[in-house]
Image 1 (tube, rainbow, N blue to C red):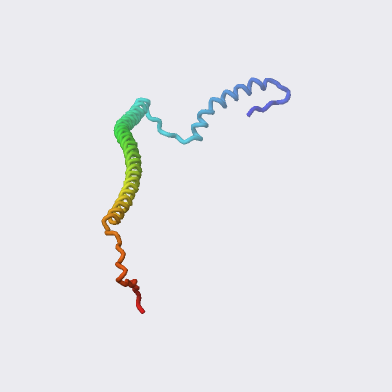
Image 2 (tube, rainbow, N blue to C red):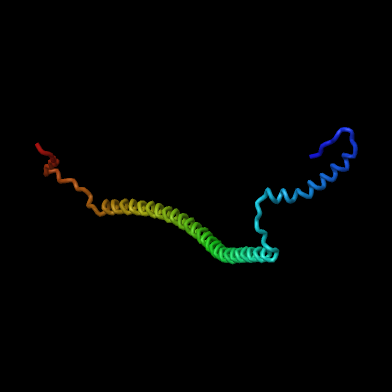
Length: 155
C-alpha cells in the first residue's frame, strides 16, 4: 500500500523501494496461502502421460477392431435383407399371377356351365321331339265303344 506524504520531501524514492520489497515477498506470501502439492519430477510426469496415452491408443485400437467386426455383421445383414426383398418382390409377382389365373379359371368355369346348360336344354328338346315321333298317334275309339274320362280324386 502506497502512502503519499504531504510536502513531498524525498518520499517518492522510498515508496519505490517498499514496492520492490513487497513484490519480492509476494511469492512467499502466495506460497504460504496455497496448499503445497508434491510436484512429480518431469521424467515421472512424462512417463505417466506416456502410459495413459498408450492405454488410450489401445482402447482406440480395440474400438477399431470392434467396428470392423460390426461392419462385417452389418454387411451380412444388409445382404440378407436385400435377398429377402428380392424374394418378396418375386413372391408378390407370383401371387399376382395366381390371382389372374384364378380369375381366368372362374371365367372358364362360368362359360362351361353355360355351355353345359345349353347342351342339356338341347338334349331335352331332342328327347321330347323323339318321344313325340315315337309315340303312336292317338286313335279314336270306334263309335260303338263308350269311353268315360278318368277322374282321380278322393271323394
